Image (cartoon, rainbow, N blue to C red; front, side, top):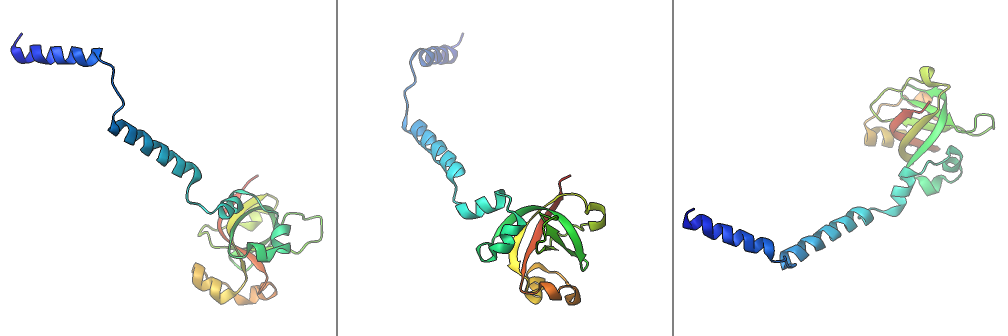
Length: 167
């Protein structure tokens, strides 16, 4: 055995025998991990926006409290009722009760076939807006046919970023 190997061997055995003490780098690493975990858990997210996206809101609540939801993202589960133009349809979560339907404008980029999904429940996530056709066309890069939307102008609508068939 040469001298270098012997010195290394002695040093390694001493390192294994002595207990390791907590050093500044270890404390800094531990603090960083706790800080990152806290940021992930309690993040910099506005609580109200998070709740609205995760919580399913009844369409009747959107219709009755429009001012509360305008400009916010919501998720609804409902039944599609009627096609409006090429890229929109109405929904009603209580079809047996006479209730004003809610307009959903499909801005997801994925076509939605109402005829194939009429009797199925869907989930829509998007922004609640009062229907102002020129403004919505400009902001969401859509081409809505005005003649189909005359009875929905200045009424609440969801500009859908996501539409999923549930059943």
